[in-house]
Picture 1 (tube, rainbow, N blue to C red):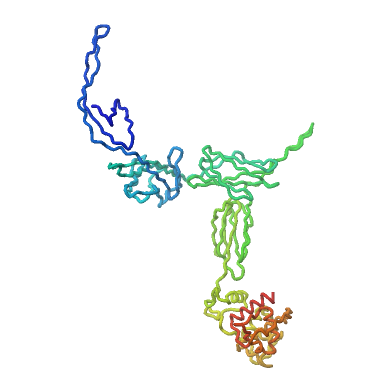
Picture 2: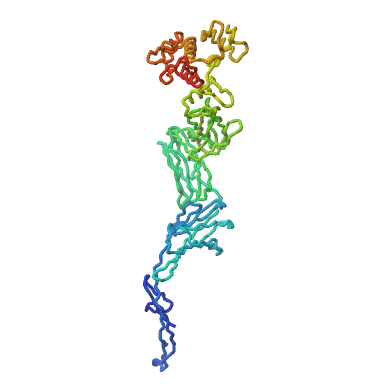
Length: 558
């Protein structure tokens, strides 16, 4: 039987070259082969040849031959894009197969007139791993865990379409091999140690597994990465500081993220001693100075606001446990404590019950970063944004004022005369007093007894009469500045500043005894007025007293 395609005959198994996007008919005809005599040879024998007798050819209906359309798709492992090698093969190494490990196949776009499918099979066993029909822009399949060593996969993407009335399926195949590798790469240096030249320049060479990343950092430089080529060799160049040696530590990371460290010593080349022309006994050359094989690495602790940090020890060898002790300033708490190695990678830190933190020193210097945060005030009625927030925080953190109970500060409540002198007594450090205040309304052994006695002894308060102090009366604003004025005088502070009060509408309401104190307080910025008035006879609230105390301490008693 003979066959023709598009008029071309197929003979002896030779393929017929066809062009795409054309219609072809297939023709089939039967023939009979027979031997016929065509003459005689020189010996008089018969010469025969084969002959074929063809019957009529039957042709098929025309069939359209479409052009193949390749499907462009990418392959990822756990959303990490993979790249083919020069032969178009994909390979990916992993330490272990995670529970959520998937291979993603992404063909980017999809036409509604086409049908898409993806089939994945193991090429070593023929087992079908996944079949997914008509995914939106790709497919994903779980990586089986029941393999040892390597998992060879055939990923086939089929796109079915209609072309010139014919149903056509285009198939694109790619191959992926997933390799289990839990062995860290080994680094071997070419020499046991390396010398720098007279200018301090050096080059370190070594071998490791091809495809490994060599990560290292030189002094005063950021970390560097080297991708090792097919031969497995690598080199690192740098310059030594004057008169210093260097322990260079490299980290080798393979494609499965297994890693190992290796170190080598770099030092200045020793001088060759001068040899006499005719030495009796030549001196032995100096031995090279070799740095210790496990040096102490620096622990860098940059200064930070809100507290201080100490490290014990202050420098350490690799593998040593280091203890960090953060000490917050008043009003601050420890926020975060982080440690990073010379490559910027995090080092594990453990918080201890006593408030310290520990970590294990890696092969190289580290940087410790500690943040401190403001301690929240324990008062529910004082919040950030209140005009008196900073003053209340200052008074509370310095121990001048406390709350009134039930987590309240009561910023709008009045302050008594006894409370004010107690605040100043605390500011003074609560010195010992001798005798009594002499006021009949100040009983012994009350919480304000010593404060009133101290204030009276130093001329800070005179009382409301010769014999009474009126400890429970609310203090007015002019009384407040008068007490502060007298306290400043008793401390020897400069109280010569004086402001003209005539611009205040209620300046005439300031009593004569309080005039110098009010003029001084306005000049020093301790009192700024209320709605444009001095309000001298108005009661001073706890928020106002906290504010005036903060201004006094920061502006006058500094």
